[in-house]
Image (cartoon, rainbow, N blue to C red; front, side, top):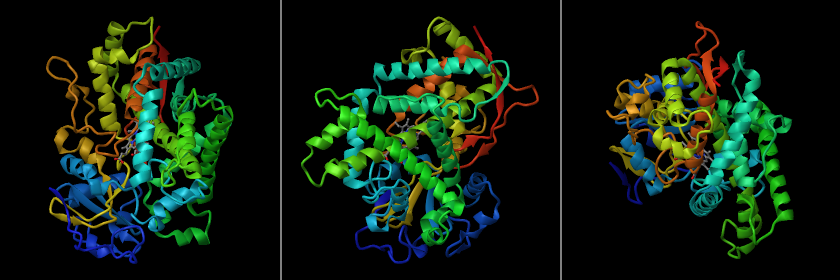
Length: 508
Ligand code: HEM
């Protein structure tokens, strides 16, 4: 059960910590016990470097009714590992914020704005905005992306072009051990960039190769507990500006902002209001037509929202999709029997003379089930994206104060008790007795509720077209019989497989 608490119930003392609920209001929640000011739950810090493994152990040992409260370096987070509880919470109108209700107290979003070189303050764009700005930006982005591509055949053609280019690029690596790390970043990013800005990059574009590399590093680093210091102890970074490589992060963020700004300037110069070409043109026209000063599309505010929304699409869409594709390759290499079944299904439905298309999906239930299983086991965002309560709520009998961070806990949602053999890669769990695809609402890689992933249709199309086209063209083999890649991972916001090599053999 989830309820609102009446307006006069316990409120947060905003002086105690500027970004989150106070300690005494959270200490009744299920947690690993001893919880010190600044350091937080000391057991997390004593438990070694693998934060994800530690969290799984703690979830098993200390959670109650799907709830676990953890604090590291003063960052207090409630994790939810129960599907039904998460469904209620993430649909709740008072759990749709990303940050503190008072913009002055959003250290998290101030940091992001500062990193991006944003002079107009925090909460711009899509992922990190809330309330009016978020509603307007999300509605607009969904509509425009739908008109320009998402769910349309034009989107499919763009991705297919990219897949073709990528498959022929890979032909130079056949029959030798090859490391795939980073190889999906550019084609994935190109599909997204083509849809939103009408442009595309060369795979050899050094500036872009560097940005994608830095973005990957940034995703890895930000998932570590020590990175909580950014949010809770900003004074450290005033004293030591390059602590934890913060200056590099800022440079990386600013080069992405710069890329967006340049593209917007180019679009402004060549804009024809009667014939918008892409997302940027359409938003520029919306900005030109907006006279309401409170609108997130008004004049310079509108431009800054455009820059940040573009940044958000780039950031949210590239790393998640390419990491999922890395897990796809890993599981296909590990599971040769499953790969053979996919080959057989693709050969019988599509053959060799044409590329797979989205309309083939309905005739490829086994392949679709394999993709579901890749998303379930790969679990690329183990703690999703944070939400914050804008009012106190009651969950499963627990009081959660206003301005508390809430994250999903995917290792439990995607691999826990519900799935019985959740740690086994078994696509058949998504098929019924007659071999038809059997989706399961507990599989939620794109999350659930009002803020669920906005790029889901694009991501699903990319996963399907990249995976099927690669398997159609190649046999993916381990480097040698005794070097089968393991499911070992590198933690961060997204979880990547540890680097491994495979051998590609051309099939036709
Ligand atoms: C396999 C690929 C992907 C996965 C696993 C994924 C997963 C997620 C998750 C878990 C969230 C958080 C939802 C929440 O806060 O409740 C999210 C949000 C978001 N995703 Fe994705 N995503 C993927 C691909 C994409 C793509 C391709 C795009 C870009 C077009 C995209 C754009 C976004 C945006 C803009 C948000 C923020 C939505 C909001 O705050 O309203 N994602 N995604």
